[in-house]
Image 1: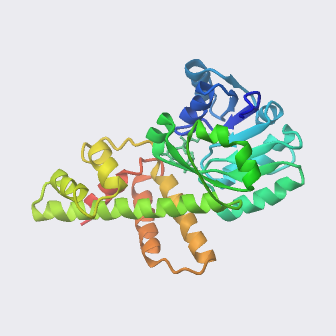
Image 2: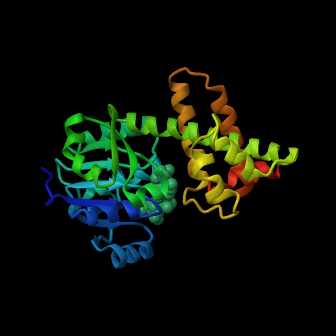
Image 3: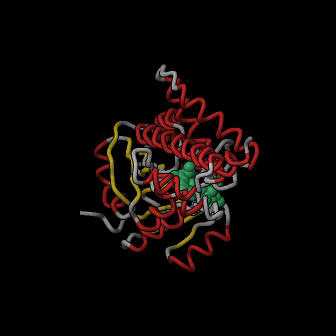
Length: 298
Ligand code: NAD
């Protein structure tokens, strides 16, 4: 039975965090949000309800469990522990026995270290990164990849179910590893399709015609089905997932591969291509701009 009195703190109400925290409120949970961007907090309260805190420490003091949905593991670590003694951070407010759920796409090895460091405060950590994009976050249909102690994961099952489908993948950090490996496959699929469309166009085949053929054939993937017509061929490039975040996930996937002694040759070539695209178009551009970058080469 879900404990609806649980006080939930939510840090990072950006493209993903906003609809995720919104779905928790819709499901009847008591949510307080914090974001370094005060405008986002005001807009959140106006449109979704809930409460806001004016610092991480204040949010920690008002929460039994805090969800982080931040750009990467370095930002998460800093928000949780601070970097220097005067820094505002969650552990300054959280009580012993509280928990943190990191739903960002963070580095798996860093997550394990953060879990160890939090033991000294009596605070537990679970990783629960997501897939499904802004569309899945809004609909509450994301895949949630959970790593950490099973009893702890179970304690927050009702929270997860308000945001998507749960997959328990293993010990602390396993969720983050699964997530970046998923994004490696996704990034490779998008880049491969972008190259195929470019070649087809040069050969005299309309891009949409090739995408239609692939979608009815064995080459289809999430990008050919859900990105080309929707964000790329119409020139919108507005999926809501930044190119720099995809490159970060690919780098993390290759770090995991290296730690596991897997050469991952295709992964390294894919990462090199995404890095070149990031240098050319900038990390804040939408990740679907990789197709425009590929199109403009040669
Ligand atoms: P975003 O940039 O839209 O949101 C991040 C939010 O964190 C921003 O509102 C920012 O102001 C806030 N923030 C940054 N530093 C902060 C701090 N120290 N304290 C409080 N708030 C802070 O990013 P996003 O697209 O929502 O992605 C968040 C995470 O989810 C990333 O790890 C990303 O890789 C992952 N992710 C994104 C998508 C997607 O489609 N956008 C899909 C799956 C996973």
